Image (cartoon, rainbow, N blue to C red; front, top):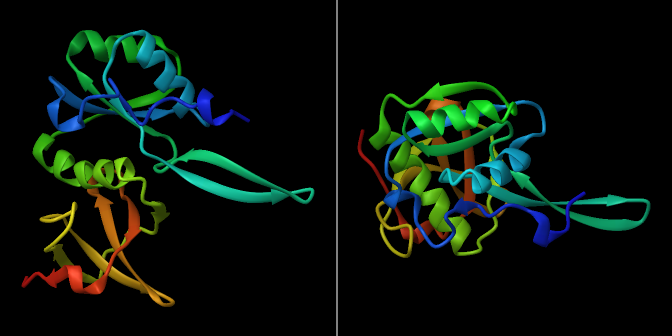
Amino acid sequence: MLKVSENPPLVWPEETSIANFDGSWWVAHTKARNEKALAWQLVHKQVPYFLPMSWKVSRKSGRTIRSLMPLFSGYVFFCGGENERLEVLKTNRTASLIQVVDQQRLMSELEPIETVLKLGKPVVPHEYLKVGRRCRVIAGPLMGTEGLIVRTGKETRLVMQVEMLGQAASVEIDYDMVEKIDE
């Protein structure tokens, strides 16, 4: 288990937003439990990446253990050209690479997740939803973000889906900060 300081950064280079990365986006489908190790290798190889992670709290032998876990298990997003793609393949930590056909769409799905993580809000993996009420955030740092609204108990959550992975993440949001999108 890694100490907090031993975890790779969510975004590398750290002071850059994923919106400002140059090149084409790719998705590395990693070998089992290799996401963080791949991220560290990408730092050393100077390959820009995005590895969204969230805190998981568990209890073992009466102790509370907090672990930083990949939000999308088995996937690391990276950006670059053919040289960067080859460097990722050389790490021997990937099962396959997924070419991103619709670069704009992937960015529109990942940028809100990056924003929420940088704000320090708790984000959790969420079941990918085919049905639900589509909405748009009308205020706050996620203004303009589209997603699905779901209710879990007393909280309202905005589900942000990454279509090409068939996975999603959610964040708690005030119901009055969203409006329904007419479809």
